[in-house]
Amino acid sequence: MLFQVAALFGFGLIAIQDLKERMVHWVLFPLVALFLGMLHWQQSTPDIFALVTLTNIFFVTFLIFTSWLYVRYIKKIKYVNHSLGLGDILFFYALAFGFPTSIFLVLFISALLFSLAIHLVLGLFKKQTTIPLAGYMSLFLIVILLLSNNNDPYQPHLYP
Image (cartoon, rainbow, N blue to C red; front, side):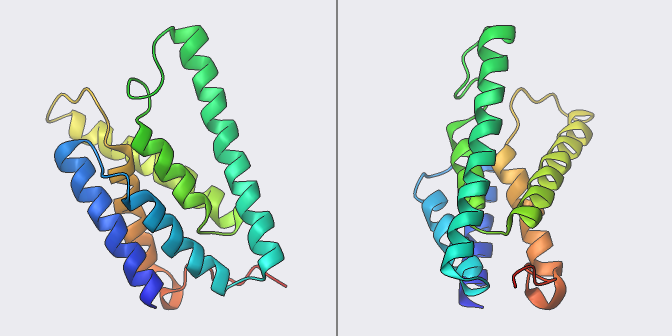
C-alpha cells in the first residue's frame, strides 16, 4: 500500500509540474520507477520480474527508436525536446518497471490515446504547441490505479 501511495504521489507531482511548467524535475522519474517496480516485485518472482521488465524496456526502446527514425529521416527535425521531450522518454522507461507486459502494453497505449483525446479536446478551446504527455499520462494512471480492483492494478493475477 505504501508503494502505491508513493507512486500516486509521484504521478501527481509529474502531472502538476508538466501541466504547469511543461517540464518535470528529473528525480521524479527514478522515484516513480522505484515505487512501481516495488509494487511489481511484490506480485512476482525475481526471474519473472526481470524478464517482464526487460521486455517492457525493449518495447519502449523500440518505440522510441522507431519514432526517432521517422522524425529524423521523414520529418527532418530534431527529436529530443522538439518531437518528444526528454521527460516523456524518462517517463516511458519509468513505467516499464511497474507492470506485467500485457498490462503495461494496454495501459501504455490507453494512456497515449487518453493524452491524444485530452489534447484534441483542449485544443478546441486554446491553441497548444506542445503536449504535456507525461502529465496527461500521469493523470490517466492516477485514475486507473485508484479505480483498479481492490487498489491492485495487477489483478487478474498473471503469474503462475
